[in-house]
Image (cartoon, rainbow, N blue to C red; front, side, top):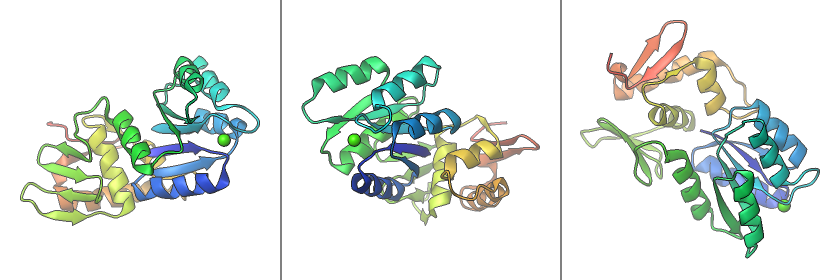
Length: 221
Ligand code: CA
């Protein structure tokens, strides 16, 4: 899962980026409204964490412009404490949820995970598909015999993306965009290497190759 974090407070932004990375997300950080609006238009984020008070262009304006152009990326806004007006305006502009500053990182993570999972069957802290469970807190994979496997950051992000999008054809380039950050070297051939590593752990049948098109996770055919 790849997130855009928009926060102009450099200290808070860097801290949040680090915490979100530790939680297994690829995170791009933007510190002004104009840059954020452009990134949100050109990059396929899974979710945006958007501060409202930003230089150049306010968060509300950025969000409103995305929605006007049909961009439905899930957006969680960061509001000033006690400002019910900001919350109301945020929801009117198309926000999916909010967290009031100051907040605990655990609350932010819980709300992010809730938004990301609204459309998928999963319980807090883990994702299960058939016999395998992904523990999001420890970033481990649990097989049906109870054996736990440690995953690297990239393996975890890739498998989580597969598990949240079962039975969908996912191209290598799409997977690359959702697993890596903006400034990382995005070599889509590397996805093949990671897919093969995951197959060795979870079994070759769970990730099928569609030649020339990409991969399908968890399909029956
Ligand atoms: Ca701010």
